[in-house]
Image 1 (cartoon, one colour):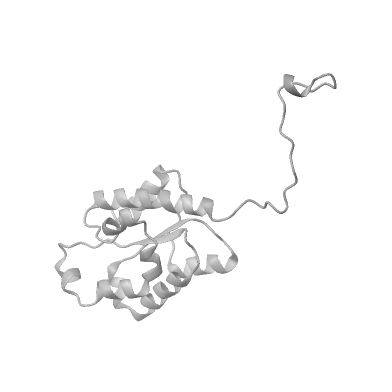
Image 2 (tube, one colour):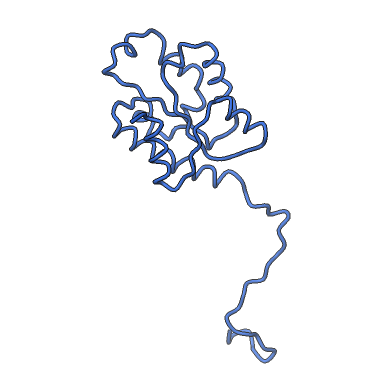
Length: 164
């Protein structure tokens, strides 16, 4: 099963409505004002493309604390391990996003070696991004009018202050 399919199934299981999209699609959504929590899965080989690195820098510059990144890194893949500069390229482009990964997940999020590791860290990151998104904005307190608390029984003029 491709990892993206697994990610979509896991996100559905966690109650999310995932959308698989490119970074360009994401940037278009941001330009339109679309906001949602997000987790960007990055192929380590993206670091071998100048255009991808530019897009990753652009992603890193977005002020979206509720969007984070994960990149699987298989230590048993000789091509990935011996390829010069992949990890360094990703880390140089994604400094803010990588630093925003909660400390307890950072090592695991940046060294995903098995599908089990991926599922574990992805589930935790989804919940973290969801919480961040929900905390990101305050209710429109300035537009709110005071609403009186409902009472369980009618208040009569005969009630004194101590007998409520």
